[in-house]
Length: 217
Image 1: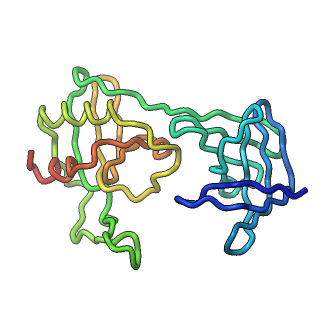
Image 2: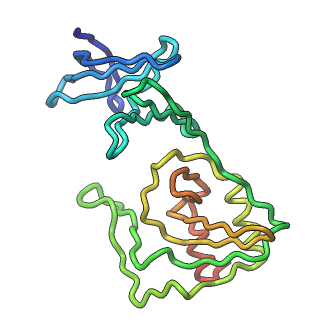
Image 3: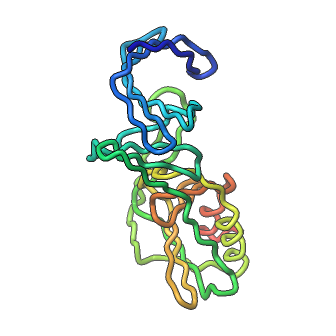
């Protein structure tokens, strides 16, 4: 079966030829796997997701090491994992737990590791420069001041959802939050923060964590 569809690619739309290979009906969703050919370039394969007959997106991919599972981003805060082998789905929703400044005893910060990735400003070459911190020692930490704790709590609580499993594992800082009944660990990467290394959140794009580490308020 051949389908002709109009899809957007950057700022330019193009007529795409799609040969359907297989489809699935899972509750209110329809998933179509096709071999496609655009105005330029070779064939490629893609999953198109429909919900109650309305086209949503092709932002879906097979989960690594599991050919049955297809992960789909419906919204930044709402993902669906489809099991294509048994026609079931699992909803993944943001699970951030807010911090209560009145319950925090202390917060300490340290660089996450000796390796740090810094975005480059050039359009040519690698997207990141790798910086190695000499003499890195994970036991060297700094304690946040009361004002820094308040700022961090506000930053975490107000952070908007960035998505599920979108951040990678190369973090810049590790913050350990000691409260009355718990110890929580939050990692930062540029303007993004994560606690469980799956759901990530976007904060204000500024050098807040660098300033905290360098004691420059």
